[in-house]
Image (cartoon, rainbow, N blue to C red; front, side, top):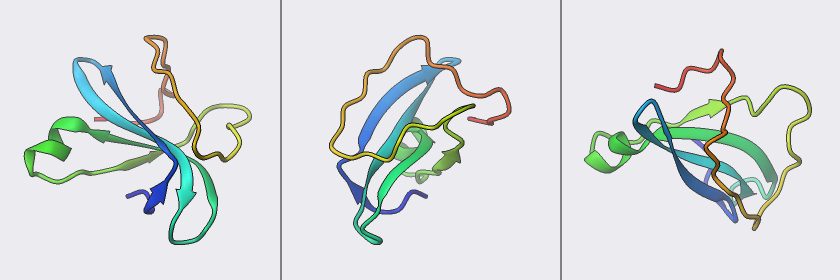
Length: 88
C-alpha cells in the first residue's frame, strides 16, 4: 500500500472494462518526503468492502517524472502501462 500522503492525484482509468484508481505523487505525511510513486487499485475491490489492494507500478521506461505534490493530472485514453506490469 502507498504511504499516507497529501497533495497527490487520484484518478480513475478503465482498462479492459475494469475501473482502477491511479494514485501518483504527493507528500508523505510519515517521512516528510516528496514522492513520484505510482500505485493502482481496482475500484470495485476498494468500494465493495473486500478491501483495497494497491499495487506499486514502475512508472515508465526512461526518465520518471520528478517527485511532486499539489499538482494536477489529466486522464487520457492513450494511457500506456508497461506490458510487464500486471494490473488485474
